[in-house]
Image (cartoon, rainbow, N blue to C red; front, side, top):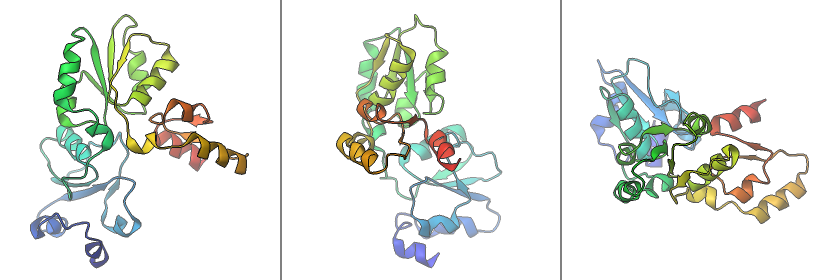
Length: 231
């Protein structure tokens, strides 16, 4: 815990919040997102994926170490729990690319459309959504909707384009948002890596641009990619 304190990760928490995990009579759980540094792992109770926001244990308090929309989602799914976020300013570029106010105006242009939104969105955007999906079930969700029903897919244009291509669906309207990390992947760099490691499989998340997905051997959600890599 001293090592964690030196990292400054808990700087945005006051002392009463920091000691929640150790307090008498309080049941708490600490959840994290997969990108946190190894020095923090010793205090976490759960390592979660995008489908695991709802905590089924008896914890009264969740300290959610991730970006803001993740903590918001946990609160929506478990409204009776207190959800704390160590850094309220930690945001997701994909979620930030789809502001609720702007999306509401966009949605108003297509009053008959069903809104399917990726879980990587703010709680304000979720309030404008008919169906919330993850990368694991987005394809199945779209396929479950009648072909003649118009769909607005938000916020990721890359994931939406991938689903549109797989389903052949022409009546999908895509919000023009993206994750800045996935958008930065270079075709040239990937081709060079394939030359250097010709026997290596290329795994890609559908948040990547279409040109990257064309070079991939396996396209899947985070959970699917991890499962493939562990085989």
